[in-house]
Image (cartoon, rainbow, N blue to C red):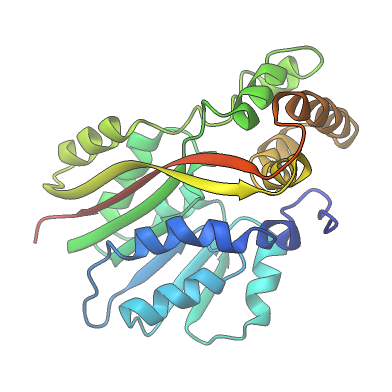
Length: 265
């Protein structure tokens, strides 16, 4: 198993499931309507590989690729793609600082689930859009799956509850209905919002655990001290494996919200 980066995302562990993670990305990308010379920003660009596909698909001469993880951006720099303007920043802060009307497409694949107050975030994104600009966002919302339930149960127990201060993974993500209403209230009359279930094959319980370690567990690594996170990870592993089938293969279901909207001209 790839070694995880200390205190940061592990690109190797994240990329282990690149094929599975690419499916919702492709579904999201298919909703975008390319326009000539689009000014594009990718919020949560990760290793930059998906950002390259985004640039190819919409024909953008450049894409502002934003991520808070130095480890991920280090991988993106290796691509040496002159179209990618890499920015290390907090995504919410960066969006709020964008000039009004400066972007034609705000794209974000599996990144905004870590940020609070999505109605306010959508309002900031809407402000940054030029007339007729587009939003394309995908966020996991797998709150009913054991991988989420176990993490959230532990979050409410000692010794983790106090340092986590009420954090529950997935709690920032809205329902598809709520996203549709929020977008409508912001003036987006053209929209496509849906909750989609992706069924992946886990070849073993350990594979399902590795998937969780490559994604949702990063939120706990950021919020807990290193010794406490190590304890959390051990407790999580023991409890999650007890709720998964004893052997593979078995279906690993994953719910995601996929949304696209276009503002008025």
